[in-house]
Length: 165
Image 1: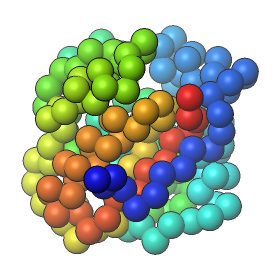
Image 2: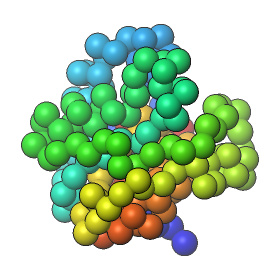
Image 3: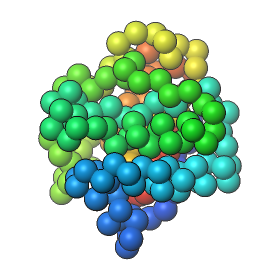
Image 4: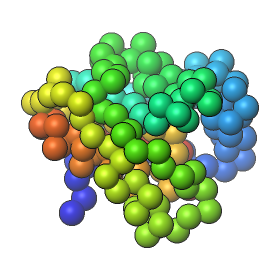
């Protein structure tokens, strides 16, 4: 069963956007969050959803230390700046370190993230949550996060990404 109310991506993962997301995610170009956040907001503004809060897809603590930041959290903060919706971080956790999913098929991606996410408390209970990530490929990660949010008593989960593959 699909646990999300709806999922939307701002654009296809091609050309300059693909290059920008890669630089933002893997080359430490955090400043791109402002422009990429605007792309996300333009998508949001075209058809807003009835959500209460924004939650970024979390990184495992090890990966966040290696990268130095969570790109989804930076995007969520930029979207919040435009919409006024609060960002709630630290409730949805990536409790298991997962392998990078580049090159994995749908079944491998799903197995990779199964059980990886959990809510540490019920602060999102009763809330309509907008889940933010950078790229949607098969939907395995966003689906696993939505399952965890619903187990944490969120009343609904919507997903938005910068791009889809």
